[in-house]
Amino acid sequence: MLRSHPDDVAALCLLARCHELAGDPAQALATARRALAVAPDNEWALRLEALALIGLKRRRAALRSARAAVAAAPGEWRTHAALVAVLVHQPGIRSLVAARLAADTVLRLAPEEPDAHLVDAQVCLRTGELAAARRGCERALQRDPGHQAARHTLALVELTGDRVASAARGFSAALALAPDDGVTGRAHSAGARALLWRLFDVLAVATALHLAVFAAAAGPLGAGRRPLGLAVAGSILVGFGVLCVRSWRRQPAAVRWRLRAERRDAAVALWPVAVAAAATALVLGAWQPPDGTAAADLAGVCLTATVLVGGLRLGRLLARWALVVVSRLAYRAALGLHRAGARLRRRAADPGIGAGG
Image 1 (cartoon, rainbow, N blue to C red):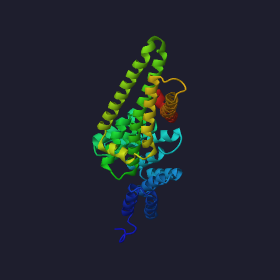
Image 2 (image 1 turned 90 degrees about the horizontal axis):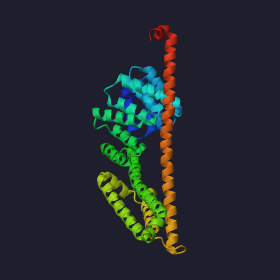
Image 3 (image 1 turned 135 degrees about the vertical axis):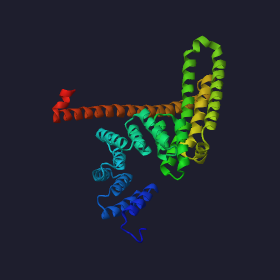
Image 4 (image 1 turned 120 degrees about the vertical axis):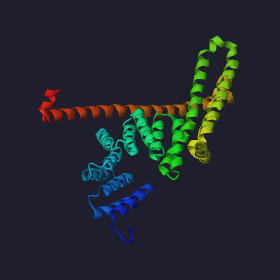
């Protein structure tokens, strides 16, 4: 087509879209600009240019192109969707408020389009509204059960909400629909690792609780502290083993394959070391070897390692939750101020609105 009609705008836009899907934003941008050289106000070419610029991390230029696409075709929902895709990558609360308004326009123009509900979900995910983001993904999947991007975004929502088992299964489902999608592949890897380390968190918490409880009950238990402590520690380890086996079997084959394939990666290879350290700290803490012995030194080293790794993970978890909460509160405050200002402007423009109210 392009050999015989090198200035065919539709063909150039299709080629740019192919480059975008192939993960080559530079070629997508070059091809979109070839189309714009022929038709400077073509909304499709402007949308493709905006998305390619976002892929190249050129946020300001992407925003200009997205706004030009909306100006060229304000009644086309895809131009507003492209604007949302650009705005969610912009810094600042004002950009999120603008993204919310554009997403509302998308839903108004195309309420039955799966992508419209996906756009809504992506804005909600960015603003920390995880329940609303989940509902948006589910609405998109109701309209198109094979929507890969909706399944990917739903898995991201689950991962952000720290539901790691559900996230790993969700990324597996999304990857099954698009096996060559590099973004989903990387997210799938992150979800599988998160599931693995969540099991360590369980063992680390059980170890800390065991040591704290038996240290506090040292006096009342007396000589029975060691055998009881060892029995409880053994039960914890057996329960942990059962939990690991059940978690492994419940995951799709894709998750198990991913962890096997990445067993030499640092995040995966260190997991058995951390688990062994926590288990050793648990058993030796229950046994209580005499001070100054090699066993006591080993118990101290393993306990220190467990506390450090567990504390680091807890700190990251709390920081992520705090970021979600702060983002949500700031966004809601900014959106409320914007809507209040809009109402005041409407009343100022038409005093009859206030009188009628």
